[in-house]
Image (cartoon, rainbow, N blue to C red; front, top):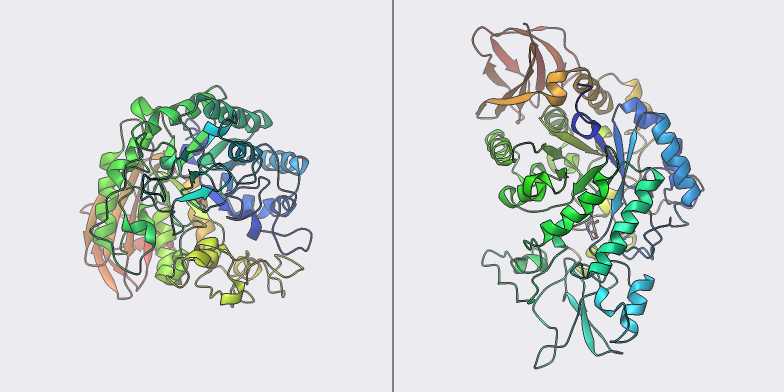
Length: 530
Ligand code: NOJ
């Protein structure tokens, strides 16, 4: 197990810095707060932390609008606070992955200020400027991911600039070698400081069709869905040239030992796996969000695992994500009982798991009253149900009024149940979601089969999914009941074992019978006898 590199055998824990721990009472989490909670992270047993952006930013998109790539937003701390955090992370044997947002900057970034100043500014071509369409209006039909046109007219120079997201997030022109150079310098800045890797924001957006052709209308568009889905994003994203620029970034990382490149890619599996790059020259881990998008049925999940495993190129390493700051929380989507089953799935599949802060205590649905809405997407396309605030609420540490997150007024409301659903209470309760998650992590870490072993799908029928993980004589069978009904499953012939974990009560210690009886919402990890 020691042979596998850390990002293969390890578990990643995503922290949304605004919401993890506030150290100065302003209601917004910060770097000193994260540092103060590192013992918890180490206790949980994960290997690496990924923090969402902490760069200076006007916060139009809560940090995904970067105004300076080589500094820290004062609200979160300072470069010294970052160095301090990094040292403390490393002192605990953990790794730190930071968010890298190369597709767009903030409109406050000095590069964009220069670029928009005049048509002949040396930085003009660092962004994507186009003349109005012949009859006037935007150059093409591209839509912003947050609704509305993807182009905004700059009155001073009479041209439009493209922004795949907010008006305040102009897209960089990655076809310009100076942009590539400048962004490689940014990567080196952080690598020299000692960060262990990057999660690259919307990596599949970096290169656009050089002819800027219209995107075709999506014939399957369903009214009431976000406007971005009304077009097929075939010319604005996933351009074949993107793989060259990713290889360029990867090349920079490869001059440092053991760093990881993770790419955010929302594409179907057959496109997703192309982000490993030709001869694995791309992302080490193109984030696999399929579990967030597949219907929660044993058969469907089985097909998904099969398709994904078959599609990964030779030498590529799989990964699975169950939650992030953009997607509804797993317990909100499935309910707490199935969220436990999902945690068991995530932590026993083959491939690096990414766990989202707060999912380990089962934070569920949080209602955000209209006056408390923060997410710019929700503000642009209100009421569709795609607002991301519910999954960004503060971490629930204890039963105090600010949940131990802040002594001030939190920037987003706390979940209504924070007084009873929190880390302090769940640490005490052996049957809690937190202790289940921790036990799953510990088991995965202790086992060659679970951390890096082979995966074989055994069965998916009715509500039950079963698979095996194996490395030499180290062998586990995982059986998951996806329903609220009792279920049975026959162990493979001549295989005996011991139940080591149940989602229902932590439990374990019993022999696995030939005919296994699963309680409603029960998942089991069985250690096979040799
Ligand atoms: C993906 C990020 O995860 C999301 O939060 C952000 O709004 C967009 N990229 C734009 O940067």
